Image (cartoon, rainbow, N blue to C red; front, side, top):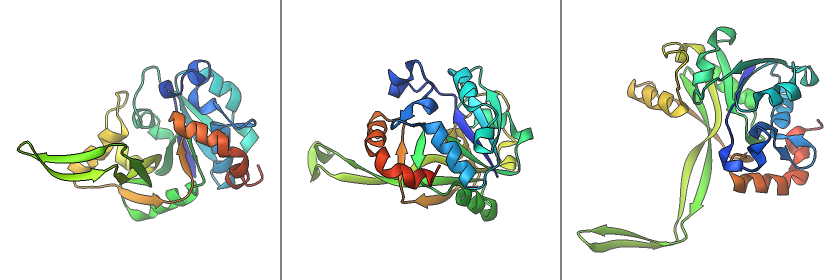
Length: 237
């Protein structure tokens, strides 16, 4: 099993933490970086190879990760000279990937079974499998609906539920091969094109632990909770 980890972003939302460190290397708790946690999890779940797509401060990621032998992984690198979006760097390395592989952001903290996501994708026949998570947003205002200058509906401080992408995908080489190499191409571009073609992605719904470390609130929460959850996330690592 093979995973592509997207680790080239500048992490603007996490400044000043990311002024000197790439986002995947920011510390969680006192012991681990987020990338170290992800690589440990992938190794524990049976992955043997990882491609790291690097860009901003990528030399620090290379220096920290090396060849991956520390995790019994084989690590390869692809460098973005210019930002290529979520899928752009993956498209450029297709010739070195198996038919089915995992793609994930390098800033997610979760106890999802990455191997099961990939197995599910390999067997479902879909062009793309998207891990999804239910989030709630509380609106701190009274919400009005109006028509012809009249208020027709009112809800006081509602909570909105919706499914979000976790930044974890099962993907196939055949899905990306039609697209141009070397041009920016995002997850949004891929999903919209697949929908337009009548070949929709499949959902992998998940209800366990997940935080997007790129969000300052989630990063603070991860640090506050890490001592209590690291045994579960790392399972003895």
